[in-house]
Image 1: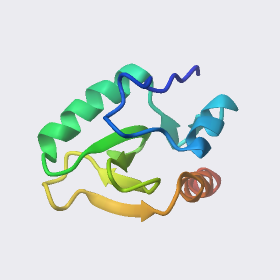
Image 2: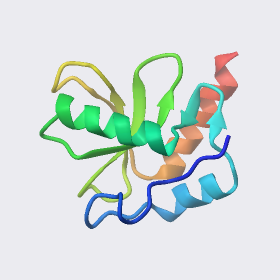
Image 3: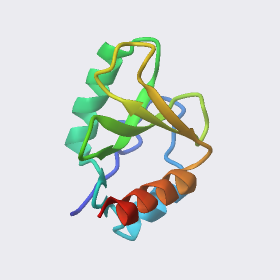
Length: 117
């Protein structure tokens, strides 16, 4: 699967992808069975929907979980933290988990892949 991240013009003002995310994509580690990175088109569509469903948050998704509606996002203004959002939940109930960085989320996603079988 060839994943292309949003380019600088498509990203929210003042946001750049963390180096860890760029490295993961560069290495092609984008399909972790249960969790997988979204295509650029999927990111754009989902970002628009998130803005409508959660207007008080500025979420930028990058991966989704295939067996439920969880998605991994950055929240603009929150640094390199990764927020796992249960999309389509009622506003205020969408937050599932917060990871301090991409690598912490990545380890979690790998653990889910290992334990899923």
